[in-house]
Length: 253
Image 1 (tube, rainbow, N blue to C red):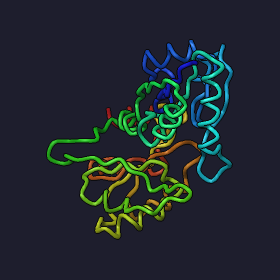
Image 2: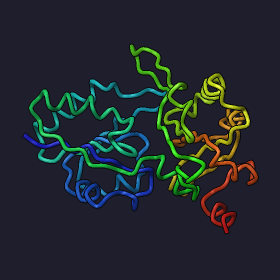
Image 3: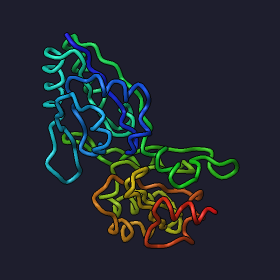
């Protein structure tokens, strides 16, 4: 019986992987990877059989139960099975479902942390998620609801936080803006969308909560976060068309 490793791929760039993650990629017999994992990261496992099991909003996706079954079958055939997830596997990665399925099958599983997208995006912006006197609380949340799940009061969770980071939300920007404003957030609250954080195609789109739906239409097809809070007020005076990493460094200087 083999072992399954749930490995965090980080926000995108291959050199942001942990040392343990890179080592396991080099040892993997089979690699199950998300759709958003960069090719440079996948190239670290040339010896492994690669299986794409990604989920993309609005696109045909692999059913979670099928992924669970594949992991179990692979662990019965291979010594080292790596399940590579974008960001950190334990944050909005459905890791618990895979852990439970593997445990029920008597298969050993280990989670390997990764840098979550929120931290990658914050580093790209050069702006801390927390700031003394301005942001003492941060909430990570998603409005996404799986098939058969009950709606949840995601906006209420954001109401009392100084800084809000929304995952899997860029395609629902209008719903996000309306939901947050319904809790009392002003339409002028600063916000920013960060697409492809840490990658060469990184884009930063400063906006406000009221203008969020219009700004989100400028996004491409890459993974994007919505970040809301007064700590992003300084970005509003920068280029409305978005800034890449080099432009951000120039603006900061």
